[in-house]
Length: 267
Image (cartoon, rainbow, N blue to C red; front, side):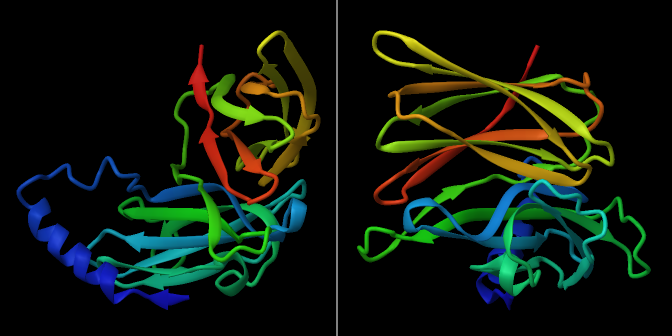
């Protein structure tokens, strides 16, 4: 974990400008509760090892206590010890391997950040902003890293969502396709995945169901090498029993280069 003097300088300067434009920070995912749907400190396929380069930023002009909850893969995180951070005003803390060095954990999971008061109660006035990239050294032995960005999401859906879709992914012999879902709610939820891989002359369809324990996440490798663009539709079979988020990522099998998209609500 490190305290970034650069972040402090940037936010002090930006705060002065924000006095003239009151809505400068609010649209940039500033919320008292923020969810990172996928984070890692774990070995991946084909020689990759993915880590989370994550920064947790306090946009208030007062010290902020923040609790971090780990939502592990396919196991409820309800009993996982809570990590509490003290973030100075208008600055942030971060690490290039946040899961291992700041949380003391390993594996694949999601992270929920919650602003709290000194006594541990929820602080609705917290203004948290989180950035993250999941990165790996190049598995082909070339210098440098490859990464993909997973955006942080303000927690607390006010309206139940039954369907979300992800577009713009690829699967082939070159690219492997992963799909995932995060269940930060306190209820078990079951999801139905419908994936169309649209090729030049035909379409391949993959379907499966996935039941997630409370406070957990899971990522699934969509097997096969039929080449095409992937269209992913995820349905909450329970009809919106709780908050949830979905995503997909395509990863180059040789270099580890990757990109990801979050699912958007559809009617």
